Length: 623
Image (cartoon, rainbow, N blue to C red; front, top):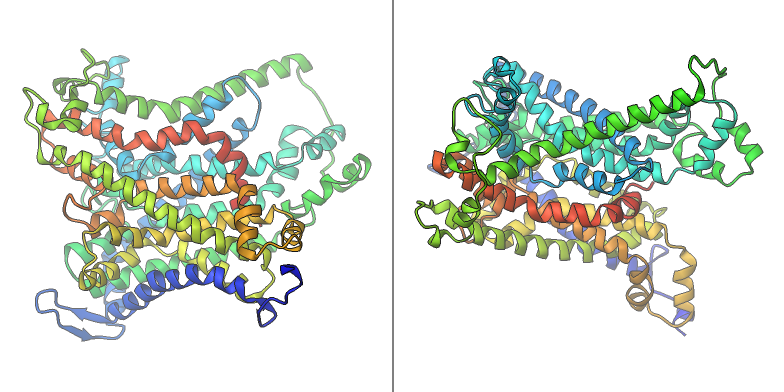
């Protein structure tokens, strides 16, 4: 029998474990470590893009950048923007999660609607909000005019400080649903008995929130804060399409400054230095967060609360440590319940409007005639609804009476490119991530695999802009620029660690005894994976595939830098180009393209929201 055969071992660990992990580690080494090293070397040189000569200057690029006023002003804006983003996404995401965790009619619909802003590509978000906040004919000013508040209308992005705050608000609108999703998965894994025990002891909702809910969610909050920080520091897509660093330099953060030096001024050395300093900031903040959260852990934290949930009710009452609580009701209990329900309903409606109104305005604009989109004073009420805008982009040759731009004719091919790249990279990431995830789950105490797992997470903390510059230079030499293959390689930077991390969480929930039983029955390791374990973790495979496809579909940074012709450009790149080049009578087509770009993510959000919340994310953040 296979189980009786002694498996080949390396340092006491079965050889198959190294074989399962090797493809993931080799790929990540090649597409992250090598470009990072190349970028570091680039930051120590001064390059001439015309002659191609490199001059080694040591740390001069760093010292020169640190001596400039524009760097420190961009640094300050980055800190302000990141702080707003972290607080906003965490607070709003927490409110969303607490509401969605309760049972009420139409909860499934609200969950799906809440996910839509996150499922949208940041490029689509930028296009949407650039017209919502437009000064002359924006949807926000149109709504104010329709409500009789036209005197409040103004060029919302015309003031620098206000533009920076609005940029942060748009980023929060896009990212808060992800925080809600992660927190909701944590809330649903929390034993209800903890709250029941506290209620028996007389604890009110606020006391229970601070004494039970927050400690339980602490591991999730560590992951969320790190993720929110990285996403804010790396924010690029929305900035590209909403403000472009303006007005003036009012919204120029470090990521945008690094992009300008690298790809606008062609000062690759200084650009690499700026982006490397941004990478260093990311790593330092991640380490600080880790130690701050770790130092405050107690026996009532989330990792120990699960143990409490298995104890008897009497012992749970004793272990749930709560401050003294004495009930002094001001209003009758029934009145308090009625007020509580009313407040809950109002919050739920506000969450729905916050999530849905901007998207509904995008859909209405895509169905509006071109003259309605540029009328002054503006209005959000169209004179009629028409499908002509969609016909112009889906059937450009038959759009009678309309002059269709070259960009509009690129839409069908761009949709095909996005689908092909997304499908290929998702398949590769899920297959390799499943093999690596199994090993990371079963051999988590082996130092090599533990270090490898956290190394993969570290790659997620590396700003994409830091890698896109060496990618551009290396791909140009390898002939991978403007190819789908190049995009697939670039997307694996984010998706392979994500798939491995998610599948690791799923395999941790599968008992090891199942492995042993399969081996005793004569299965090889590969047979055990295919016949026994994969059917068990099938929900995780589907979830990982969905997330990988969404991330690839929505990706913009690598696509806009590494592609230049229709043969490889994805829908996000074409949409961004449409925003820049569209003439006034093509605005309707622009909004139609935006709607088409968000259809796949929205379908996924509505169909799989329950599955994603209850399954995949609870596994991906475990541990």
